Length: 75
Image (tube, rainbow, N blue to C red):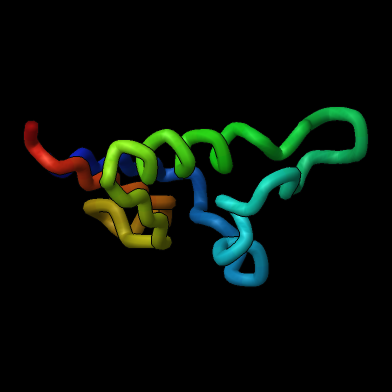
């Protein structure tokens, strides 16, 4: 099963996109984020023998956004 989620919010900065699944990584100001949400999501998906990936993409009419792809085996 493949689930793709896209937005049109401008994408993720290239200097941080490779870090967003790391534990305690956040782009929010100090005290406003814990940096565990995407890390925990990746751990859950990996524990289910799946994968989660992110990339920046053009959505329909040149609206840049993030695209998350979650792949899970069908049981």
